[in-house]
Length: 82
Image (cartoon, helix red, strand yellow):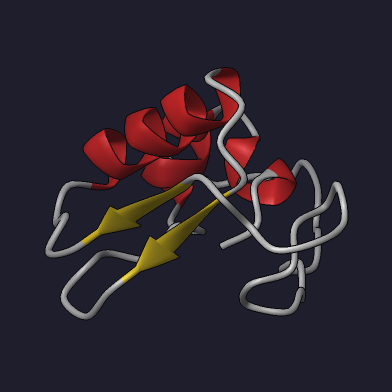
């Protein structure tokens, strides 16, 4: 099959510990070794839904901007500081 490009967006750039609300992040989800992009997207979507301030991805965690992760996150990877 062919792959059609629906949208092209840039990866958000933010200070590592700066909250979108201003000030220091207080509630972070720290993810280490999440290899399945679907699981990563679901965790990011859940963190955003619970009102967490951001996510910190450690080594061996898959790319949050992987196509499957983006689908599972339902856009949370663009709204939650990573």
